[in-house]
Amino acid sequence: MKRFLINVWSIIFITSIFCINTEILFAIEKIECGKIDNYKQWISLKSSVNGLNDNFFSATGNIFLSVDGAGSHSSQYKVKIYKPDNAAKVRKAFLMATSTGNTLHKITNSDLYIEGKSFTWTSQVNGTMQNYNARADVTSIIKPIVDDRTKGNIEISVREKDSKVIEGVALAVIFDNSQQFFERSIFLIFGAQKMSGDSFSIKLKNKYDDQTSYANMGLGISFSFQGPKNVQYSIIEVNGKRLSSAAGGHDDGSSGNGALITVGGIGDSINNPPNPNYTSENYRYDDELYSLLPFLKENDTLISVYTKNPSNDDNIFFAYFDLPPAHEEIFAKYVDHTTLPDINNNTFPEIASLLINSSNGENFVYIKDTETNEIINKISFLDDNWTPVSISYIEDINNNNFPEISVLGINKTSQQTRVQIKDSKTGKIVNNISFPSN
Image 1: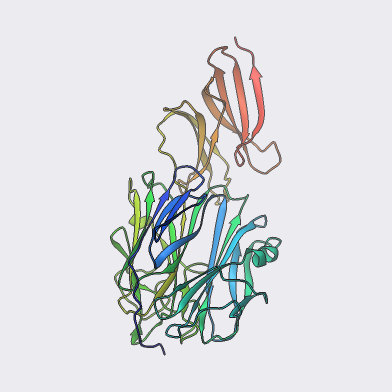
Image 2: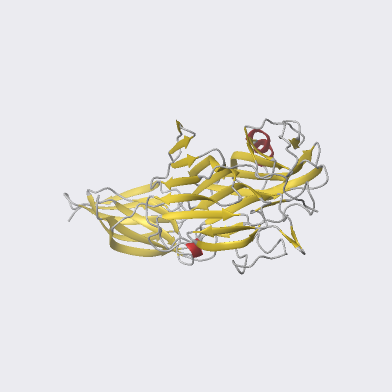
C-alpha cells in the first residue's frame, strides 16, 4: 500500500483572493511573482510560486459546471460528463492529471489520451508529493462529442501509457445552457496546496444574502488512501469553522499507488461528512463536494478556505466554486406582486414582485422560487417616464412554453396608460398595448 515520504518539497505559502463583482461579467487582475497581467474576467488573484494559485477559468452567466474524477490500475478507463439539458453546448473543457507520488514523473504529451486523441498540456506545476500536476484545455476534443448528445451522463475514454506513474484525472466541463433560468458564477483553480497549511479566499464585493439557495465548492486530491489502520486525510476549514477532517481518499480510483484520486463532482453528495471533526477510515465518508451555506451568514463579505494535511501525504491540486452571482444591493419600493406557474421545473410556483429602485427609478420585476427563495430572473419594465401600477401574468403567447408577465403603467406626463408584456424567461418584449388618457 501507500508509501512513505522521501522528501518534502519547499512550498511558499500563498493566499489567493477572488473579488466577485456585482456586474455579471468578470475582470481579473493576476499578480504573480512580481508580474501583472490583466484578464477580462473579474477576480484578483494574488499568487506565489505554489499553492492553488492558477484561476484558469472564471465566468458568470447561464452556465453549468460538470466535474468528475477517475483513476485506475488499468491503462484504460472512463471519466464522466453530465450534460444538463439537450440544448446545452460546451463552452470549455479542461483535463487535469497528477503523476504518482514519489516518482518525480513529469507528465508528457504522450502519457495520456482521451477518446484516442492526443493533446498538449498547457500548465504543469510541482505537486506536494514529489510528483507533478498538469492541466490542459481539451475543448476541441470534448465539444464535438458532447454538443449533439442528449441530456445525462456521457462517458469519455481515458488511456494512460503507464498507469503506474499516473494517479488519474479530473475533467471539468462548462456548458452554455439556454434553458437554465438562473445565472451562476464558476471559478476553476489549479495548483498544489501546501501540506503544512494553505489558504485562499473569495472576497465578496457585496454582502452575502442568506436567501441564497446554493454555494458549492469541490476539491481534487491525489495520492491519498483511506482504509483500516491507514488514514491519510486533509482538514478543510471555511471562515474559521471546520468543514471536514476526512478530505482525501481514493473515491474515484482504487487502493494502491497509480489510482489514488478523489474529485468532488458527479455522483457525490454535499451532505457529508456527517461529523466535520471526525477522521474516518471509510474513504466515502467525505466526497470532497461541499455546500458552503452552513458556513456563511447574512452580511458576510469573505469566503476564506484553509487546508492542512496532518498526515503529510496528500496532493490537493484542484478546487472549484459554483456560486450564485453577486447581486447589487438594491433598495426598492414595493408596488405589486403576482404568482406564476412553475418555470424552473421544480414543481413549485414562482412569485413575481413589481418594484421601483429607490436610487435610480428603475421599474423592475424580481421572480423568485417559492420553495427555494432563489432569484430566477430580474426583468426591467417600461422606463422612468412611467409609474408602474400593477402586475399580472398571461399564459404563453409566443410559443416558447413560458408564461408572459404584464405590467400596467401610467405615463407621468400625458397620463396615458400602457401595458407592457415581456417573456418571463428571456425578458424580451412580447407586446406594448397603449390606451388613451382620460
